[in-house]
Length: 192
Image 1: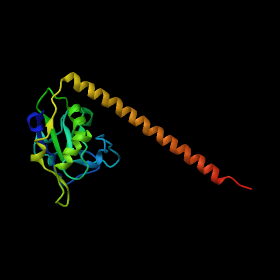
Image 2: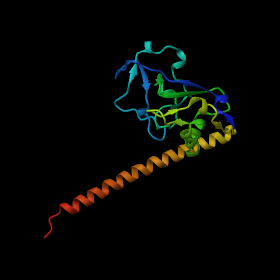
Image 3: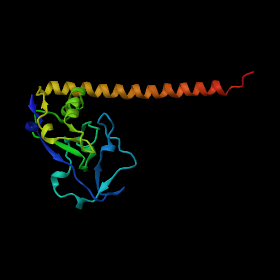
Image 4: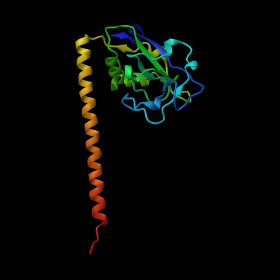
């Protein structure tokens, strides 16, 4: 195990004064992600003008991990090249791996694991109006150092789990529609 600060740089996202619904650089916000760390961009995408970006390092790169630093939603999200160009809002920590023996997908899965989420939630200061994740404490979060082969195996298992979860949700939605259809049909029939 190593503290996360020894394997990654922890940056803050960008504070943007002005946003627009079109053009510019994609501005990722907490509402753009679901509880499982999946990007769910809808029609309410936000963009900022490139002039709002003070430093090239604020642009997200493939392999960055976003972790909400404010609020109670703390699912980590792994950035892929198809999410770029983009910047994260100031509500995020941007975790940029420096240790190439750790795969970003593995770190995101680890950060989203229930045991790790419990540790992260314990680092949140709830005395403020908006709960804030303590960066100094977070930098000490222990991360397991396992072989690349084991990391890849975990990533593959997680991918299969995500696919099965999506299929299960679709199946439940279909069953719900079927139930409501049968229920509606029964109660609207003429009874003698």
